[in-house]
Image 1 (tube, rainbow, N blue to C red):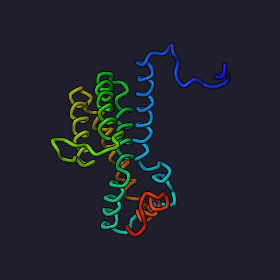
Image 2 (tube, rainbow, N blue to C red; image 1 turned 90 degrees about the horizontal axis):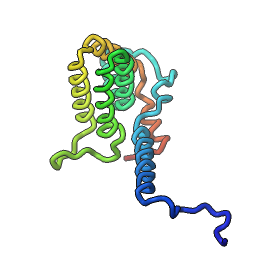
Image 3 (cartoon, rainbow, N blue to C red; image 1 turned 180 degrees about the vertical axis):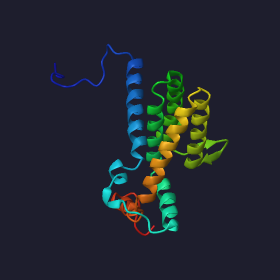
Image 4 (cartoon, rainbow, N blue to C red; image 1 turned 135 degrees about the vertical axis):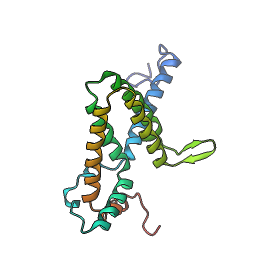
Length: 185
């Protein structure tokens, strides 16, 4: 009884398959946390001190371009949540959206290395564009056209409005403070 009080690392009654399944689930949970960790913090996105009206059209377009690039994953989540809520009373559409969400998770949100297809690296914005077009295309096949169009318009208005009024001067400073960008590089 020299092992009294210790926590066993393996059990003779558990099969190797159970241990492999638990390890797979643990890795999946970690990938989920890591994948969503690449999105920008919601607190940074909603910082009220960073909201001002742009001074001119050029400033507005520059802000939109920078914010769309910087908060790309957050904006995709906003669109998908709005789309989900618009399809609550269309069960077939929800099933299609659930299948597409699985593709979004594996191909966009939870990917920790670049997507390589036929020996070429596929950039994130291309994956985002293709998944968006496929999701919208398959959802249009479910005859929920009005709901989809309204959800896309609401999402576009919210995203563009946020991108236009969110200042961009402090975005890179926040990354530098968090250690994501090395000064002088």
